[in-house]
Structure formats: structure tokens, C-alpha cells
View 1 (tube, rainbow, N blue to C red):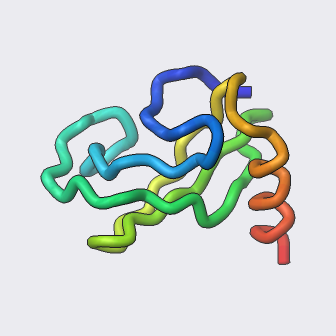
View 2 (cartoon, rainbow, N blue to C red; view 1 turned 45 degrees about the vertical axis):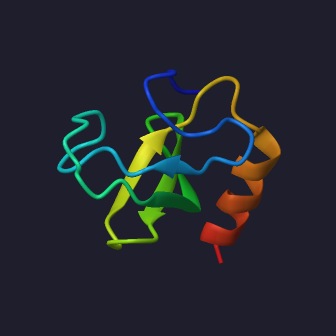
Length: 81
């Protein structure tokens, strides 16, 4: 899957809005909650699409080996519709 260089919960895939321009920069001052809204597959990696419920900013972040894979599949199926 992906690496564990993220801040999302492996059980629900929600996270805190900590990045501003690119995933990993930890420059955001928003600190809203990032909702998992979809999943895509890029370069053989599952990428979780998250959207901040406060400011609306979206990011795609790599999944991690300990992420709840059933939720990833559900989000992927929803994204394909």
C-alpha cells in the first residue's frame, strides 16, 4: 500500500488539516478536520482523497499498510460511481 508518512487515523481515515500546499508540508493554520471523500489508485498506490470540512481544501494522501482496507474499498467504489 503506501507509507506511514501521514496523519490520518488508520481505522476511519479522517485526519486533521495540517498541510497547506502539498501533502507533508505541515504549514496549514486551518486545523480543520479532513473527511475521506474518495480513493484513487495512482502508481499502484491507494490514495485517499480528503476534504477539509472547515475550508474545503482537498488533498490525496497515500494509504498506509495499517489502514482499514474495507473502508478504502468502500470509498473506491463510491468514487467510481
